[in-house]
Structure formats: C-alpha cells, structure tokens
Length: 466
Image (cartoon, rainbow, N blue to C red; front, side, top):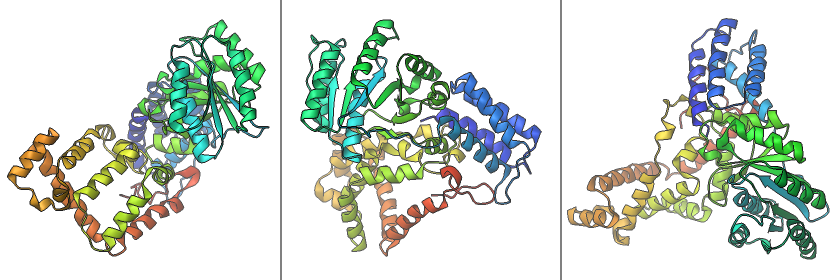
C-alpha cells in the first residue's frame, strides 16, 4: 500500500539525515523532492500546494531537538501535516439514534460497494456487537441482490430479500419496517451504482436519502483512481449530504493520491479503508497510522490488533507449551506458522506495518512473494505425518516422492528443510522463557511511540532492528 510514495519520500529523508541542521536551502531542496513525489502519487494539486506551504513555513527556523537529527525533525513535521490533511483521528460511525440506525452506501459501479457493505456489516457485528440487516436497492445490475444475499449468509447477518421488479423506495420502506420488527440495530442499504455520475442516479439516491433520513451516508470509492476519487466524492457530496468516505482496493494502490486528497477536497473524513478481497478486509481509517506507513515508520498498533484478531490463539498457546516442555519444533508446526502468516495478509502486509521499512533499499518490499509460502505448504502436505514429525527420515527416494507429489524441485525441498532447521534453533533459544520476553519486547514498542504515533527513534537516525 502506497509503496511508490514511501520509496520516494524515504530517499528524500535520507538525503537530509547527514545535514548538521535544517536551513532554508536544504528545506527548499527537500520540498522540491516531496512536491514531485506527491504529484507522481496523483495527489490533487491544491492539496500538494497547501501541504508544501504548511511544511515549508513550519520547517524554516525549526529548533532541532538534540535527540533528533535534521532528517528526523523534518519527518516529524511531514507526518504532522499529513495527519492534518487526512484528519487527526479516526472518524467513527455515528450510530446514536433510535434503532435501526440507517447507513446509506453510495458510489459508482465497480468501486466494490456491495462487497464493502457486507464487510462493514461484519465489522459492526464482530467489533461493535450490533445486530445488522442488509438490503439491496440495486435493481439494475444483474445478480446484485443475490450477491448481497450470498455475502449476508456468509457473515451470518439478517438479509431483507428484494426483487428487481420493485421500486427502490418500496424496497427500503419494507426493509425499514422489517428491521424495526426484528429489533435490528443497524440497517445497511446498498444502492445502485453507475459507470458515471448522471442526473437519474442522483435523483434516485436523493429520493432514497430523503425517505430514509440515514444517520450515515458513506461514499464508496476506488483508491486506485487517485485524485479522481476525491473529485468524484466532491461531485456526490454536492448532490448528497455525505458523512464520510470508504476507500476500497487500497492494497492495490501503490501511489496514495486518494488517501491524501479526499478529506481536503470534500471536507469529509475517510472512515474506512478496504485492504483486500476477503470479507475481513476492511479496517477503520486512522490518519496517524496511515501517515506512519507512508513515511516508512510502520504501524505496530495495527499489527498487534491484527494479530489479536487473526492469529489462532489456541494453536499459538499449544506451540508455546510444546516449546517450553523441550519438545521439538517439527514441520507440522512450521506449516501452522505459515498459515498464520497468510491469515494476516502475507509477508508483504506484515512487513509494511513493521518500523524501519523506509530504510530498506527501494523496491525491496515489493519483491516479497507469498507464493513461496504456498509452495512450502504444498511440500509439507506431500509428506506423511511421520516425516513431518521427523524430517531426518527424508532420504533420496522420499524426497523424490515428495517433490513429485507437490510439483516442486529437490532444491525447493532442501531450502524448506534448511529454513525449518533455522527456526528450530530459534525456538530452542525461546525454551527458557525467551518467547515471553520477546512478546514483552513487542508490547514495549507501544511505550516507545512518539508524537502522533511515530516510533521513537534513537540518536543517529537508525531505527531498531527486529
């Protein structure tokens, strides 16, 4: 997410690190680089101009703390202004109304509105313990109603069945009555999208809005459209009183133009960000955390929260007990660890949340390929249970059988065995309570967070290694 912008800005900050202090000349040089990076990231021109002016004004004559290098002091300023542009804090949904609280979902076709509606329903059900009902007022797109019904069944929430022969106003009116009967907390209304903004679309959704009087009207927009996302949101906002924006497909957006432009152009906060095709791929938008990710500082808080939600705690506890008792870390355990990493979005997703990513060589994060982990899993699946528990049994003929069964090469299997040995050694070191110490160290990262969620950096500008 936002890799191109991260790489360009990291290069600019590295140039400043060796300077003795912040001067007008080296700030101007850095700001030229930052301006170019933002424009290449498809950030809207008015946003770039305002951002550059504010950072330049604050940077000239800035007192540099003895514990920070000029590069670090400049990063701190850039981060603060990024947060100001995107909003200082997460804007939560306002569901304080007589149930059911109605949330109207609007947007163009192809932005992922129907999937996002279901993702939001899941989030409200699991995190806020709300009873949610879904209804589709999209009578134009073939199978739109069936798609939402399938997703509602998948996440086990209420669904009000509508028909393409009904008028959208009739559908939402009936859904609202049904939601009241069933004591639903939140009614999410998926509306029809179009390939472009047209008067018919705006008239229809305006009529729905007047009839429902929703507590939230969210505009769902594709992050990969860059500043066009902000301009489209602005056009919608002029016809419809939006309360917030949901950025979808942010995991495929290497630029970041939409995230940095939307609030400035529309005046409406980004409330959620879509980070994958899976039904759990929606998270609240935290400007401070996104700013940290863009600047290569990682996002440890989100990483910890994700681990809390997606890591199988029972399996992790079983492994911890096994290691503590001195039992070996076998290939079956190794396979479980690979699965846990994939549950958290893969190595690339984990890496972008780790501090110090900005210090990696350009393009390094993009070279991580999760397919190698799927290949490892296929190799282990081709082994017998006895072989997984005792890899020393693997002779030449067994190795040939395993590689033929998994469609891999002998060198792939040997590489897997070598990596497993390395993990075994690491696990042995954790046997005497080292694992608990390591987890305490991870938790301690939160106490090192500086202003705005920025990880505290030691003198000299070098981030801690993990």
